[in-house]
Length: 135
Image 1 (cartoon, rainbow, N blue to C red):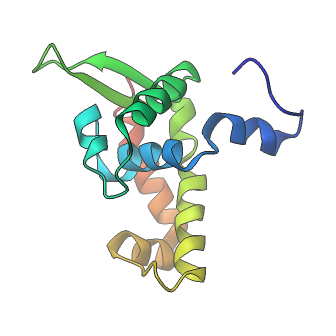
Image 2 (image 1 turned 135 degrees about the horizontal axis):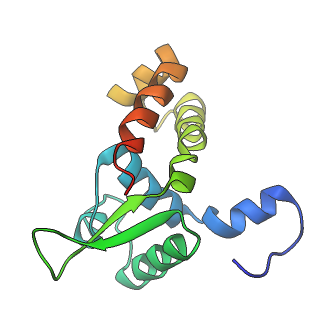
Image 3 (image 1 turned 45 degrees about the vertical axis):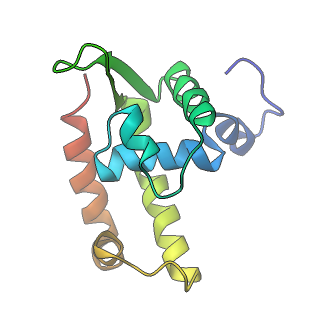
């Protein structure tokens, strides 16, 4: 990203992935195994098509995601996390843990229970899995 609002590291980070849609796309790839535009559209949060196109382009431009043509369908793109994107894993896990801890409407599901029991182990497990997927 060319211009930031300030030189504060938090601001610089939020300029890249600070909107809810970018974080949800990252979550979907990282934790739910979604890889394509159509799969992102199926998420329960119901992202609008124009916002999805914009956020995918932003995340790709920031080298958080990479895009390639699907080997099984040449008219379809597959998205994956880059090493830079994978480095967001501990942040995503912390946000999930915080949300489950402080919001009664967000109960811990299977992954949340694993995080509560062994956060470091979950992060290690997902790091290893995601690093195998980097192109």
